[in-house]
Image 1 (cartoon, one colour):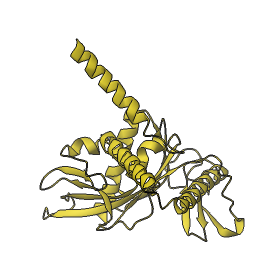
Image 2 (cartoon, rainbow, N blue to C red):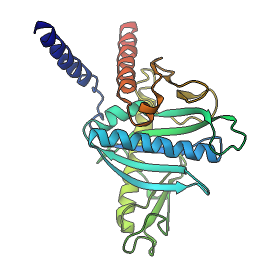
Image 3 (cartoon, rainbow, N blue to C red):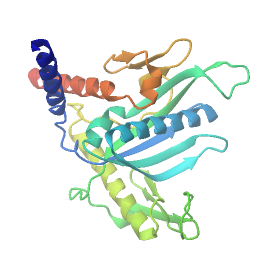
Length: 279
């Protein structure tokens, strides 16, 4: 009985301890997740779709809501890029660990010779901020384009110029939204995401010495990966920042990401503590 009680208390303590790791100012916020296919053509586009499925499975397990804001489909299979809004308890707090380049090694299903392929995809994570008062955007710095939505349809969605692309000329940041039914709604959503991106850049510049914010843009290619998913000749998923790894690659691709996220948050806390002690 005492052993069972101890195990129960240890489990409860572990959950409470894990909750304290969400100390960031935006950890409670909705997350904007953008995934871009890297080098590898069709293989990379398929990998992008696999990552989308992985995050959707995680969201289902967490009872988070997922909304696709924009997607660009590959000519044959997969996705060239996709932007999603993920809403739920501690969504950004969990998902911020996923920002960076993800590397896949497997026997390509698109290769008739069954050769092993390595491909990459870039994941960007930003918090969606309702009102960023610190960010003021000059309308002259924006180029706003409208076009027909390429979404799944619905009344008037694909028959009017409701989709919106906003380009911030000084930084060349582009945001596209086509999910909403009206052009005005898409523009409001795109502006909100743009302000969130600019705010994150501002914070990153202010606090880059501490390295508290991750997710800066990196080229999706060799050498920059934060995590590797090896499906052949053996199975292993390894995070290169924390060295946490597991051989249960199928479970990870089905959304079992919490152990990686917890290790990342603990690693960030340790790095922050060391920085403060050194200064």
